[in-house]
Image (cartoon, rainbow, N blue to C red; front, side):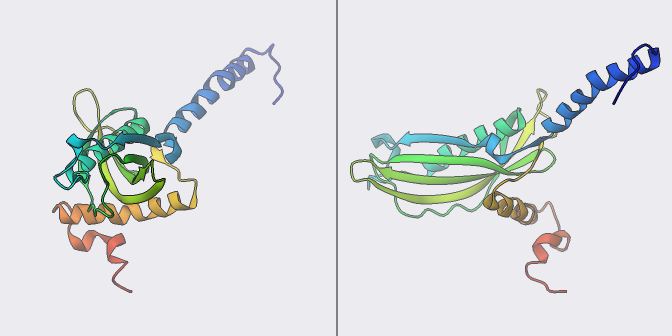
Length: 200
């Protein structure tokens, strides 16, 4: 756009576009984030204090590590303090042994109002043998809080990869299932979940 900067009104319009429009774009950009921005990787070496009498990693210790890596991912996305709201069903696959290196990866799969669903994948590696395997995966839900401890709105999320899109689309059904099981939603209100089982 061409401006006659000698006219006061046009000078004001020029300054408005120069100063305010980029600021508005920045504000819009900060309300939407990519899942990759929350991607968190954590490594742990399984030590004797982490194992049971069979020298396998204790399930409770693994859940603790999963909670930590997922909380970090949620904090990256929200920029706020977060608390664990729920943990989905966690099934343990192959046993993780004493001396194995555990790699936990977490990424926000969908954000709602003040809550975020975080997808976690756990892999283990026996470095001397070179064996690597997937142990389990799960979804944790976190709520972002302000300094007074009240829930606060979090940025929305825009999936990029095919897997991220699938997890994003399935998140609403998983959320409705959690709410129904917690008694916070009536089953007939869980329309996304109901659509999986009932044909119109």
